[in-house]
Image (cartoon, rainbow, N blue to C red; front, top):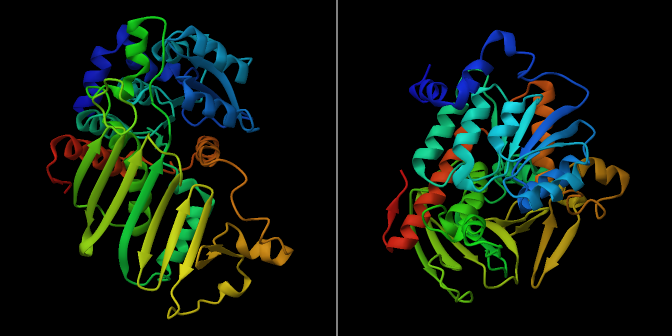
Length: 404
């Protein structure tokens, strides 16, 4: 037994976790119990938690039976999406009540570790919103706990479960881009990240993203998602990062930048440029992988391949649907393209019908039912989480930070 697990069992309130591991409580805390519906508890019913509730409500195999949040108003809003769920004032209380097959943790990032470790110690499969944690020690602790016998943890990075990204990855791995030239990413929203509250204490809790002690800001919360996607595509690890941050719009006394530029150094002298901002929304979100024979663009539910004039034809292009971006014509990358082509529905298949979160939660529910592996285990999520944390450090210090 690891030191982390031993310490947790010693310190857990009321010996809850230790009891949960005993044979006589197997019925209370089953591991991967096959059932008609997976009984799920959702901890945290803020924006992301409510999105998870909305998606889970559409899945026949899932049933949200418990909801926890410290805010009464948020608990009630969550109940509207899961009317039969029991309400709890904390995640600890939800876990102690039992009766679950799995748990979704959508709390603020700095609260992930204790709840996640407790759930894993109880043998509950965990879906944990990304990133893993807000600091390296907490992220490492979660990764260690996920390696315990019978532990199941999947992290909410979406690339692994996005059907159109899987298709794009196949194209990339086939050599369609040939030699990698550069990587780019952008994430643009016009929103302050600040929330009003009736008391100063509640306002501080709600605005954790603007507290440098609790959150690494845009690099940690956002950049790590795109880093994970590019690691998953290329199989490479970023080696260093530099960052620049400023406040361009939200002059409200915050010390966390609302606009960040990051430069990551990848193997083979490949540079990644990344722009993250809360001050502009034009362009939304996108990732670009450019090579000597073409470029792949990724945008959530969509993906395209733009080929250079001297690139080789792979054969499938004849059946592909095309789209034009200014002077560039690209091939729309589709999931199940062969099937759609046979049905004459290539154009109808452009873009995923569901959100990326839906596919991630669907994969989680299926893995719990079928005793399958996690789509995005901690071993895959940890490097991206740490890269985001170190990017935040680089932005704050103005110094280059080595990642490996």
